[in-house]
Picture (tube, rainbow, N blue to C red):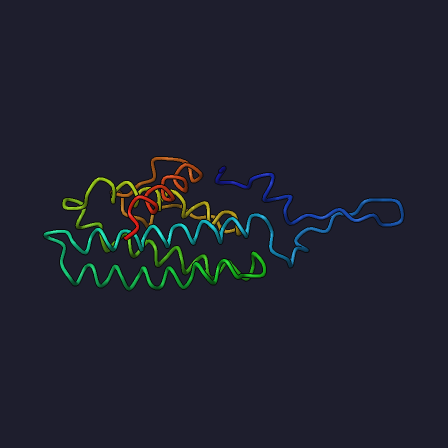
Length: 177
């Protein structure tokens, strides 16, 4: 998705209303859940589920400290709760602070594993890259624009958000415990 503003996102907050035979645009009068907001909720849930799936893998790795797994697990629990809240948000403006918190927590989870990249299996690193690819999309669809600079370079996104979401779905399905 374009980092500026997509036409669909711009138009999602615009309604045309007939006023005395003329059309008037009401910009920003969108108090209900939009398709973009629903997408943000779905993507946040998939990201949180992906993070949660990783716990089952890293908890068994030789060389992974219990403290790192516990810290990562704490971030995952926060991300799961925030994903539920994002999915229940009534409007983009209500979702924005939740999405900001979600992004910070997920970035912290990625950071918790950054120093362990040498022992992480390729499938986990791939899932973490997919998670990093989806975060900016979640922020964009609720009207927040951010650079991915807060995420570790080891997990730089390599695919589009839609491909990353499908990859995460496949990862979760293949690694359910």
